[in-house]
Amino acid sequence: MATINDGAAGKERSLNFLEEIIENHINTVDSRIHTRFPPEPNGYLHIGHAKSICLNFGLAKKYNGLCNLRFDDTNPVKEDVEYVDSIKEDIRWLGFQWAEEHYASDYFDQLYEWAIELIKKGLAYVDDQSQEEIRLGRGTVTEPGKESPWRNRSVEENLDLFARMKAGEFADGEKVLRAKIDMAHPNMLLRDPIMYRIIHSEHHRTGNRWCIYPMYDYAHGQSDSIEHITHSICTLEFDVHRPLYDWFIEKLGIYPSHQYEFARLNLTYTVMSKRKLLQLVTDKVVSGWDDPRMPTISGIRRKGYTPASIRAFADKVGVAKRDNVIDLSLLEFCVREDLNKTAERRMAVLDPLKVTITNYPEGKTEMFEAINNPEDPSAGTHQIPFSREIYIDRADFMEIPPKKYYRLAPGTEVRLRYSYLIKCEEVVKDSEGNVTELRCTYDPQSGEGSSSDGRRVKGVIHWVSVPHAEEAEIRLYSNLFIKEDPNDVEDGKTFLDYLNPESMVVRTGFIEPSLKEASVGDKFQFERVGYFCVDPDSKPDRLVFNRTVTLKDTWAKIADK
Ligand code: ATP
Ligand code: MG
Image 1: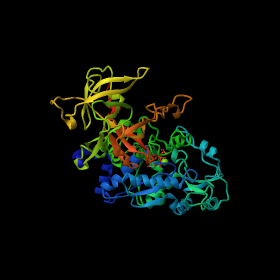
Image 2: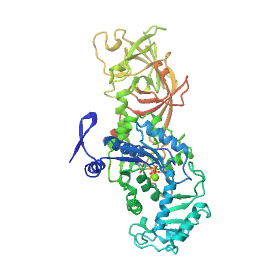
Image 3: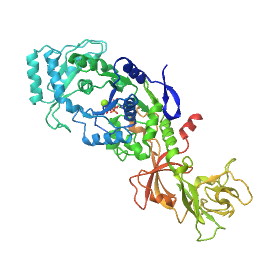
Image 4: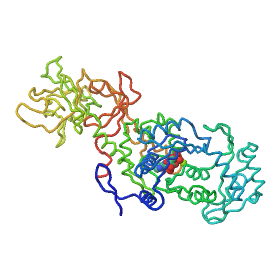
């Protein structure tokens, strides 16, 4: 089997089935490769679309070809320019640039002329049956359909009626144009499929110029053909549509684009259908399409994901011919891997416990140098103030520690990251027995990794200086759904019955002062805690951070058990 070099990692991997098809095309038909990404502008793009984008643009790039962006805007009722704009923004953000920008609606005239051509060839007719009659007349998988009483109208009558449909003489649903194929065809989609329906509705681009609109099957293949698309790649559910795709192209004798199908991306704990995502937005379950808990590209971006991490994810998922479900932890793994290389380290305490260092002079401030990114020496260092009062995370203290607990406990010693060794001398509690403060001593000889007598301490914990720290809002996200497959609903329930009530937990934390200068979108690793990103809701005196992902792979750990 042929192999290719997988970029910088130098790993060889086999060609996927689409790459094999394309290489075969290059070797036997034509070296020109042209793909397209064809979103319907009826919602925001999600991570499944990102997979399709990486595939279409990626294949074009790999084989020195081109990839178009084509808006499949054939249904005026659901579509909007807001969606067109967001789709373009998302594709650019992912790092791709389309060769040509097209709209199926730009082809309405051409499609109309082709419909007339098919009528003239006796291959299309106007049907007066109602939607329900047409549906019933289609038959079933085991029974053939019934021919419409209008199926054998003359060409002249069809031409006249179709022109009058276009002119607006009929109401919605009064007539349709159908392809005349075979009412007994084993593939139900070929039992005289509808080509045009009447919709008196304003279109976001063509306004009120049209009141007949082409169906997906009549528009898609011909749009591909007009653009001379060589490989029209779509998801598996379209494989039954392929014979119809080919039928129109063949009967019209136009450029032979070909359709290829791959398995759509599904993720655990995630809904991906635009209808459901729209419902989450309209029902205000989330704050909008870009809520960091949404699987939309804009949501994931706001949560702190990088384009590189999503491209890496799409690559790791690969292309399959069979439907499967990818574990959400793979997506998290990819962003963790990328941010580990690029995000600067800072200290923040999300669940503060005050520590007073009793032998440290009052009013004194000392600066320690902290490494910005151990994975990238060129990232340099920054200064962190230290003083007599600091905050540590509650999870870093235990009054009765279990074995191998290397953090702070009564009488034990721990290293403050970049700074001194401290020893817990006294635990202060309130009247209910809650720990409110620790009183510690420090070893003045132990700054920056040393100690007075060379003794070594295993635990290192993060901290911030109380008088220097800034308060910040920290939003901790987890899965939006508690059920692995929220689409699989029990009787009488909907996917909304499986929402995770703790998908967003808001904390007030303390961040080291150097973070005060951070801007929206900046990404950091809060040491020992996770990766965080500055949210657009931030105010100059109160930053808001989104948790992009935890440091440890908690999901994989659970799976290990
Ligand atoms: P939805 O079913 O969520 O409404 P859609 O398929 O109707 O999505 P389109 O705008 O028509 O959305 O999709 C544009 C392109 O993205 C199509 O080629 C489609 O096959 C592909 N696509 C959509 N969802 C996925 C997915 N989950 N995985 C991979 N590709 C996808
Ligand atoms: Mg679609």
